[in-house]
Image 1: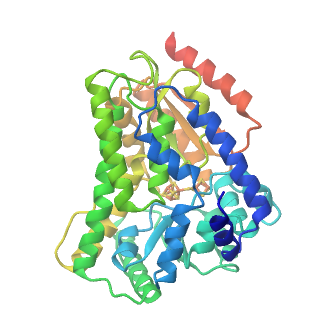
Image 2 (image 1 turned 45 degrees about the horizontal axis):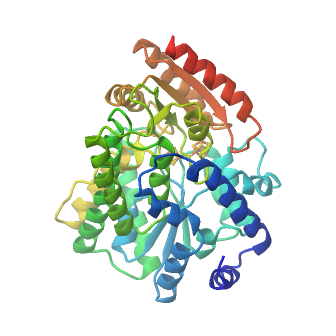
Length: 424
Ligand code: BJ8
């Protein structure tokens, strides 16, 4: 870690001691989980570099932006329309909240039966260990689940927070409400940045984010090939990095990686044999550095070939339809985001359809439904997922876990038994 970084972290109010411990732990974890993989695409070098300097270069860019009068807007959920932030000259950054490290801090305040994602986010702020949180001028929350929306009230005691109301149904009235929320968010961002969003700036921003979505679609399409040209762990990392890296640079790097994967596909070069079992993971998002399930799975020799989650297909599946006039553009953005099939909606049949369709498109041998412990929306929806997959004769394993390593042995045993059952 450089002296410049340490100085920057001090200026951001980071508590250096636990922060150092976190960085050390991350380094070891990354070495063990990522760098030990065989036959990785060279294009992953960029993503290794970004994670290797996770609290360095990108934070510095955000700081420079702020020093020049720009604003940084932090988010936790894929419902927050980042196009509006870019269009107003701000920088949106998806916060991680994927580590056990910050959970004990949150445990002192939040109820024990709160999901790890919420605790991890809150713990980062309490402990002052995340420079992205510290560097942001506004944190944008949403009402997707009860735990989150109440945590945002507490978070607002430490930092400016704005909460978007995400409806729970997809009726015409709900769509109307959501459109009004998107318009209100646009006004909040304009006020924060002091910049008016124009049809031109929004068109540019939409194009920028759509390009990244296309690049990620391209990456996922390449994962459909047998043998899989990239590991699930690496693909997950690409999506995770896309949440906070510069959108243009990241798009370029994802496309460069895909160019390389195209060549691998042409040579039938894969990360595992063509007959390796192919697994789809569906459920809660996996924020950096939550690589637990992928790691357990891929060390057994299977390949994770798709994630139906917000750190997977839900992040990039639909594009925002381009429009000419500002009102129509905002409406188009609202429509695109209402198509995210999060379990916060009722009913949410579209997600069940998505899982079956993805399982077929990616030729999976089995699905793992992953939900974070105490996440009631995904846990309850898992019942319907199970029935739907049974009808489609697709093997399913339901897993409920948190960020700790305590259940790793038990998970391995259950996963091995599941894979054994599929192989028979
Ligand atoms: S759109 S999945 S990113 S809400 S795991 S905090 S739901 S108790 S993360 Fe999500 Fe947006 Fe939906 Fe996606 Fe609550 Fe569940 Fe915790 Fe969750």
